[in-house]
Structure formats: C-alpha cells, structure tokens
Image (cartoon, rainbow, N blue to C red; front, side, top):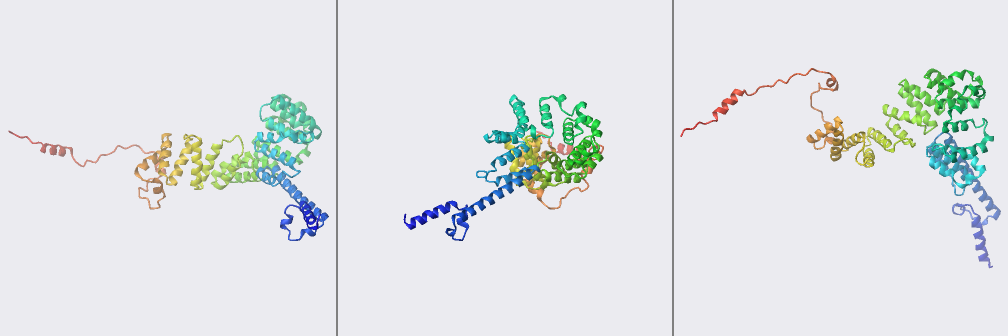
Length: 461
C-alpha cells in the first residue's frame, strides 16, 4: 500500500470516530489528533448529549407531576428516542400523559409494547395499565391482570395496597367489603397517617361524610402535620358547608385542590373576581384541572376576560366534552373579542357539521357575525332560520332588510340618530293601559256624498 492510499485509509478511520458535527464545525486541523484524543472528544460529546437528555427528562417529570401535560410532552419530544437509552422511561411518561388527558386507549397502546411485558418493567406500569382497563368493562382478563399486579407490587406498598383493593371493590360493586366503610376497622385505620388519607379519600368518593364525621375526632393530632391530610379534611368541611373551617384547614396549603376549595367558596359567596383568581392559581399548578376549568371559563365570560377565556377553553381536553359545543363556545368568545373573520370560519364549519341544522345559538351567532361582516346574503338566511325558531331580534332583522340594502353598514354608521329620545328600554317595561285610537276627520262624509251626486248627470232625450 503506497503512502497516499494509506493516508486516505487512515483519514477514513479517523472520520468514523469523530463526533457528529465535529469535522464540520471545527476550524482546527483534526488530522493532528491521535485516535485516543478523538475517542475522548467523542465520549465527551456523548456524555453532553446524555446529560442534556436527562435534564429534559427531569423537566418533563416535573411538569407531569404538576399536571402540565403540554410542557411535559414538549420536553419529552426533545429526547431522541431512536438513540436514547431512556426510551423505556419516556414511553412510561407518555402513557401517564395520555391517562391524565383521558385517552385511555393511547395509554394501553403504549403499555402493550413487548418491552413492558418483562416482570422488571411490568411492575412499574401494571397499576397504570389496570386503571386504564378499569375505565371500561370489568372482564375476567382485567381481574387476572389486577391480581398479578397486586402480587408483584405488594412488597412495595406501605399499606397492603389499601387503595388498589378498595378500587377493585368499588368497580365490582362490593361496597360492604370496602375497607374503612365499616365501624369494625376504623380504629385500626385512624391510627396510621397513610391509611387515614386513603380512608378520607374513600369516604369522600363514596359520599360518606357521615362516617367521617363520626370518627374524625379519633384521628391523632400527629396526622394534622400532613398538609395532604389537612387538605382532605378541608374538603370534607367544604362538603359539609362549613366554609370557615374549610378555609382554616387549607390556609397555608397552595396545592391545586386547596385553590379550588378557596375558589368554590368565593364562588358561592358571589365574589367572582376572587374566585377567578383562585381558579387561575389552581391552573398554574395543574394546567388541566377540570374542576378549575369548568368554573373559570364561565367566570371569564362574566368578568369579560375574553382572552383568558379562549386560552382556558383550549386546555379542555376530555372525552366528556362535545367538540362541537366547545367550538361554539370558542366562537362566542371570538365574537366578544370582535374577531369576526375567525368566528365566521368556525361557525361555517359548525354549520356543515350539523348538516345545515345547527342549534339556535349557532344560527344566532352566524346572524350577528354576518351583520358585522356586512354579508347581507348570509344574514338573510340565518336571520330567517332564527326567526322561524321564534327569535324576536332576528325577526326584526328580517324586516329591516326590506328597508335597508345593507343593514350591517347602516349599523356601523356614526351619524346622530334622529328619533324620539323619550322612548327607552325602561319605558317599554312599564305597563300602560290601552287607549283607543282617536281618528282625525279631515273630509266629512257628507261632502263626499255631495261630490258624488254632482258627477251624476241625468239626461233627457
């Protein structure tokens, strides 16, 4: 082998060991590096990549624990799963995200992968898999998988899988066998801080506040050191309508549930701005909290916080919500923000989805958007449909279109309106007794008869 060929062959070997992008980005003459030096650079590059992936995984877990699934997905997607050794963990986190968002089919699809069938991996995900399956029918296979999961994870439980056992009895309807719902096992439960929390959760889920009330005084004082326990007791007092006590128990707690409790209390007291603030704080801690979203969105409408309302509607990701109703609600917020073009686009899609027979509210919104967009053709059709369904305002619009060529442009005119200024909405609401119309006589009937008689000519032959 001559020297030139040998040199090319040597360079080819070196390039094979270079880290990705090294030769392209380096201004140095890399041919001067020894094989050990290149291997060291390659290892450092690999370590940097793995460190970066680990940081993304930690951030994804942080947002996942806080319920912010969108940011959790963002950081998980930054990890190159084709080359990363973290694929098992990232898939598990993605399964949790799908479960939180209510997409149980996607959760099961991820967990059905062959790698999760190994015992060492299955024990990490079996509880999530069983919970996802329990959202559907309770079949024999679900029961078998639950029993197997219970067996391989029992050693990791500090309370003999109290919650999993209770969940199984709830699903199968064996309510009498649920631990903590009978007086016989209460004394044992209230002596353990972990069991107390599960007992409180079970009692609240089963609407057995009466049982909690009977035994709450038996809870040892040491249990109250736990903020999670006090949060549950605060929720119990909220359920009982004891709002002052509920506030006291969650006073120094800043969790999602605590903010929701404070928000609900303010909502019942009609302190809407305070309630809205607490629900927004709850959503800062858990971005998809359904309890907070279901209350914050109507409050955004009441308080005229249109932009916040649209942002909150975008967070609603659950199978229980009709997507068409969600789109209609978004359209209403766009109308209030005067985004008529965007509202029109959404409403036209809704009209097509309803096959030209949308709910009255959609037709009313389409009519208003057509009015503001100066679209007389659409206005005529939508106001006609709404009028036929007894919407008075659209019946009025139908009549106005006979008078005005484009009522939308007329509405936008800024000239001074001439009319009876004494007539307002309040005067229309006041009852006034009916008075017969007084006809003004301009031509007497006798005069008409005399004129008629003069036109008659009596001729003689």
